Amino acid sequence: MKIVHAASEMFPYVKTGGLADVCGSLFKSLASVGHDVSFFLPGYRKIIESKEFESAKLKVVLQVELGEQFLRGEVWAISLGKRQTLYIIRRDEFYDRANLYGTRERDYDDNDRRFIYFSKAVVQAMRLLEIKADILHCHDWQTGLLPLFLRMTEQETGRSLALKTFFSIHNLAFQGLFPRSSFKLTNLSPEFNAIDGLEFYEQISMIKGGIFFSDKVMTVSPNYAREILTSEFGCGLEGALKVREDDLVGIANGIDMDVWNPKKDPYLLNHYSVNDLSGKELCQENLLKKVGLKKGEGPVYGMVARLTEQKGVDLLLKRMNFFVKNDCRLVVLGKGDPTYEKALRRWAKSHPEHIAICVLLDEEMSHLIEAGSDFFIMPSIFEPCGLNQMYSQRYGTLPLVSGVGGLKDTVIDVVSDPENGTGVVFEPNDLAFKQGLEDSLELFADKKAFDHTVLRAMRRDFSWKRVTSEYEALYQDSVYSD
Ligand SMILES: Nc1ncnc2c1ncn2[C@@H]1O[C@H](COP(=O)(O)OP(=O)(O)O[C@H]2O[C@H](CO)[C@@H](O)[C@H](O)[C@H]2O)[C@@H](O)[C@H]1O
Image (spheres, rainbow, N blue to C red):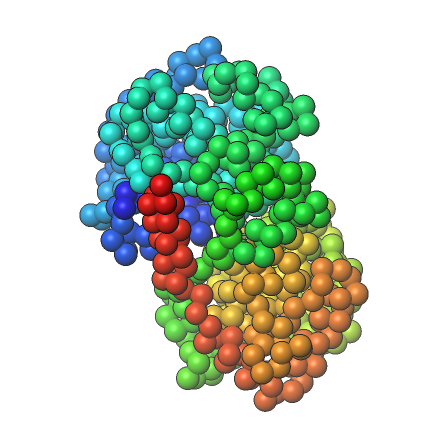
């Protein structure tokens, strides 16, 4: 099949979170099973300055209509193999910036222009480069309007650009909401500026565009696909999603088993596997040394996350005493809400023997924490899929997760299912989290049960190979269904 993806991030080129990991893996895995895959990304500074861009070739020049203007743009291509092309939409005014979406204080003022432009540019590039796709797959609000722009262009030109369009929701909490006045940048007819179009409580919502105007709506776990139909998790879009319920599918993400492999992880000084775990102890020593902690009586807990409300930082902050009281160690790697960063720093400062916080975006450190911890904490309030709980299981680090979204789909609770459990699952509230922490201590004290759980966790298959065949089946089904 000819498959085209478009998103605002992709690992290893640009990453602020899990969207990038998933896009990078999908791009690679779909090509590896024989599909012809193209990926469109905005030409951020980080990409233009990268080594990979040195081999990029200018393919075509664009004139994109944005409201009352026509804006020039360029499409550059990097060939990554026989069947894999990365297309970069370049317009430096929009993308040659230090960050992807904004500064620490606020989003960029022109994110509506930047991503409406990107979506239109992808459609024009497909037309000019004569890319006729079986599937166009868009991700998150930044590309929410792309499926609609594609169909509009097809109507105008009478030429088919993609047989089916897919839209994946990686996080419904980020909706691409803009003032209604931004609608004019779309050049769509006014009928789309209505309740059954992009309008959302007196604003326009880009994610709603993806939900309404793509052939299939996807999300990143079966449980989250069910949850977002409810008012508790639907972020106000549960009504729109209900309309598309028959076309809504959840497939749990996989992980890149090469990048996340304790047997040969280049970031680790010592390697290990299910057959020999001795390297894991050394990884723990190394981690503790690196963050200036010494081993205590209790286990080592790790956490790597964007520090936002979603990730349950409030729950963690309420229970910081647990680590001190039980002589545990806690290592947190995270960046995000300055209030959370400050609060965590304060704890690390007042309890330097027990708690370490690294306020950084640091890929290497995230691997050291996955390898060097006994437990990995994810007390998320909601979690479309989550990746670290899968990295953790692969690294023999037991995830301690709230039972929401994809966390529920990918971690088996050892307390209720001691024969099969691979982690501790609790309800997303303070008391249940407290209980979860205590359960982890109890499990840690029972060495035999703990070791068995670790081995079971490490043996699980979260590979993209399995997940990719589910995507393929879905793509094929939708293309050949009518
Ligand atoms: N300070 C730091 N330094 C280094 N690495 C850091 C870091 N903070 C976070 N990371 C990394 O960023 C990624 C986070 O991925 P997640 O899937 O857990 O969350 P995210 O909320 O970004 O993604 C959204 O999209 C993904 C993909 O679909 C869904 O799994 C998820 O539920 C949804 O919220 C992981 O690879 C993690 O290691």
